[in-house]
Length: 399
Image (tube, rainbow, N blue to C red):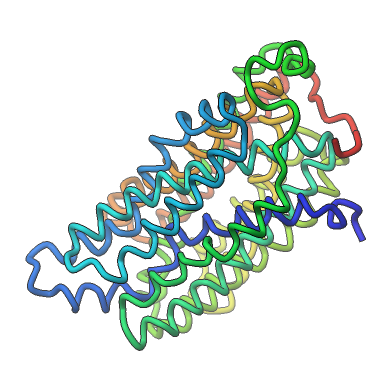
C-alpha cells in the first residue's frame, strides 16, 4: 500500500474534496421534479437549470478571495467555516418555498465550496512534498469521481420520493465536521507573519506565470470537457438512445475511467514529465471526442467517454500539482484559489460555448471541434511549459 494512504491527513483532505462534487451534481436528478413542483412560476424552466450553474459561478468569483484568507488566517478557519456554510446553504432547499430563494441559497453554497476547496488544496501542498503531492491529488480525484457516482445515485433514489429530499445529502458535511477537525491539524507554516519560516519555500522563478498557465489551461479544458455532461443526454436521444439509463451508463463509464486514471497519474507523472503528462491527457481527450464525433452506438459512446474521463484524470492533477509545486509556501492558498476558480469558471462557461455550436453545427461536429481544441491546447501547453524553468518536483517526505 502507498504510504500516503497510511497518513490520516490524506484521508481528511480526500473527504473534504468529496463534498465539493455535490455542489452541482447532487440535485441533478431532482430538476424535473422541482420544475413540476414550482410549475406556477413562469420562470421555472430557467431557474431550475440555474440551480446547477449558480454554485459554479459563485466559486469562480469567490475562490481567489478565499485563497487570500486561507493564507492570512491559516487553513482550518476557512475550511471549517466553509463546512458550516455548506451545510446550512446546501440543505436550505429542503424547507425553502420558492425557486428564487433556493437559487439564492445555491449562490451561498458556492461560497462554502470555494472555502473548502481552496483550504484543502493548500493543505495538500503543506502536508506533502514532491511526487507524494501528485499521487495524493490522483487519489483525491478518484475519490471525488466515485463519491459523485454514489451521491448522484442516492439523489436519484430520494428524488423519486420528493424532489426536495436530495438537498438532505448536503448535511453530510455536519457528520464529517468532527472527523475532519481531528484529521486535519493546522500546518506550522501557513499564517502570514510567521517570519522566515513562511518564506522557506520561495517557489520557482517566474512562478506567477506558471500558475497563470495552469489556471488558463484548466479553465479551457473544463470548457471543452463539460460539453459531455451538458450535451451527451441530448446527443444520445438524437441517435435513438433516449432511455435515461443510457446517459447514466455513458456518464458512469467516464467517471470510472477518470477515477482509475487519476490514481495512476501520480505514479506515471514522474516518467511522463511535466510536459508529457498533460499532453498525453489531451491526446486521450482528443481521441474520446473524435470517437463521439464518429460513433452512433452505446458501446462507442461509452468507450469514447471512457477515453475522455481518462484524459481528464491525467490532466487535472497536473494542473493543481504543477501550480502548487511552483508557488511559494505562503501563497499556496491564493494559488489554490485561482486554480479552483478556473475549474468552476470553465464549468460555468461550457454550456454557453457548446450550446451555440450545437445549434449551428450539430452534436457530432461540435465534438469534432472539441477534439481539435484538445490537440491545440496540448501544443500550446507544451510550448509554454517548455519555456519555463525546470519543475520543482523533487521527491520528499511528508512534513
